[in-house]
Image 1 (cartoon, rainbow, N blue to C red):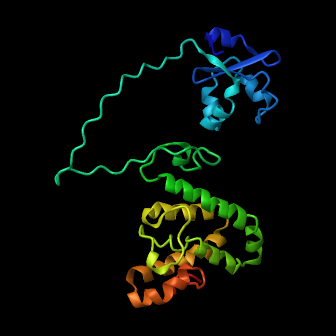
Image 2 (cartoon, rainbow, N blue to C red; image 1 turned 120 degrees about the horizontal axis):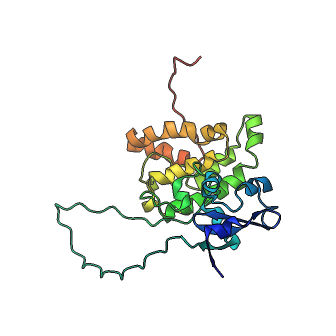
Image 3 (spheres, helix red, strand yellow; image 1 turned 180 degrees about the horizontal axis):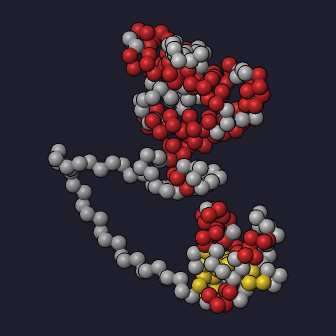
Length: 275
């Protein structure tokens, strides 16, 4: 049963050895039995016993923590504003065709489910259910796919590769077989004419530059600059110019091998300032 408590009632529960209540955003939590579980220790909780701890909580936590420990919520302050009753929905207007002079609205994407560790100011905001016009479910699906690939195939061995200064050629081939190399060409058009495989989680016609960003971002989570440069650094510099400016004969001759991961490419230019 959810209780309605006054600030004075909450303030009376300020003895950690007996009962410890705190307030977060006008909701009351009983932390008496939680003190031993608190990662920050009992002392921190004792400082805010019987008080509003909203400022301290949001400094180090995010909304997922509140959801995880909803069982500790016992009620709300009696001063908490009640949500206003929602007015009945208005009937949707009849659709009409846009004239040539009217702007066409961009497609709206729904906010996606929470994902990852939800580290404040570290994970992208669209991981935390904030709406983004750039990301939809195809991006979330690709993020899941590439993260699993990195966690299983790359992360356990990346330190060994760094020490040996060598990444197995098989990893590059896997990138090609999974369609990732063809997807990071700096274009929102997936190059179907030069590959036999596509990315499993995203249809080629849905591909855009934000899918490319996700591949790079997830590879970078392995924490190795050498890995990223080895797999997609030289490739990302050398292959897009061929795709954009090469003759069709040249592209048909060399791109299938490169995008499949069977062959490598880089950009051969001098850098006079480098010693």
